[in-house]
Each structure stands twice: as C-alpha cells, then as structure tokens.
Amino acid sequence: MKMRHSKDNALLSSRLLLNTARLAAVAWIVATLAVVGRAQAPSQGPFTLTGEMATARSAHTATLLDNGTVLLAGGWGEGFTPLDSAELYHPATGKFTPTGHMTTPRAWATATLLLDGTVLIVGGAQDLSAELHAGHRA
Image 1 (cartoon, rainbow, N blue to C red):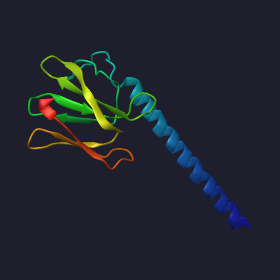
Image 2 (image 1 turned 90 degrees about the vertical axis):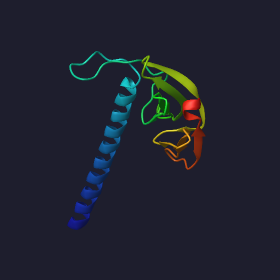
Image 3 (image 1 turned 90 degrees about the horizontal axis):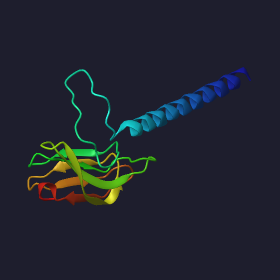
C-alpha cells in the first residue's frame, strides 16, 4: 500500500510539472506576440530601429531574396492564429509592404530560395503542403 501511495505522488508531480511547462510556454508565446512588430526604444549597442511590419507575427519565415529584399511569410498572429499573409522588407527604405497571401496559413514553416529566384515554402504547424512565392519578381 505504501508503494502505491508513492506512485500516486510521482504521477501527481509529473502532471504538475507538465502543466507548469505548458503555462510557461503559453506565457512565452503571449509575451512574444505582445512585442513582435512593434517598435521599441533604441538600445545601447549595434542595433538600430527600422520600419514596422505590416502585420505582427512570430514563428514566421524570413528569406533574403536576390534583389536584397526580405520575404516574411506566415507565422503566428495575434490570438495565436496562423497567418497566410506575407510581406517584403526593403532595406533601402526600412519599410515593409504586403505582398499577398499564401494558399495556406502557416507557422513554423520553412522557406528556401530556389535557383530561379522563387521561394519554396513548406509545411508548418500540422501542415504537409508546399507552395511557391514569385520571389524577387513579386
């Protein structure tokens, strides 16, 4: 009987640890979404502020295109919903401009610049599909 009590305590401790880890993960996600896409005060160091994204996002892809712009695609938006939007960052101006919508909302996807200049965007949270973005021709 004493052994069973010990197992029950171990199971309860494991469940408590798992729930604590889940709460910590949710808190991190909420904190990340609170600051992503919003300008912050200038810091002391090598970083300088630039433009502000058109859509607040985290867990998105960022791909440097042949023409020097950066394609940002998908990610988690406000309310922890996957995004289908994409935007381009223009280093020369420091501005972000929307560049359309993907066929599928994606977060945690991968993006690869192909030799022809298009960007292959694959997968994401619970998604197996893939699609192409026109890249520097967009």
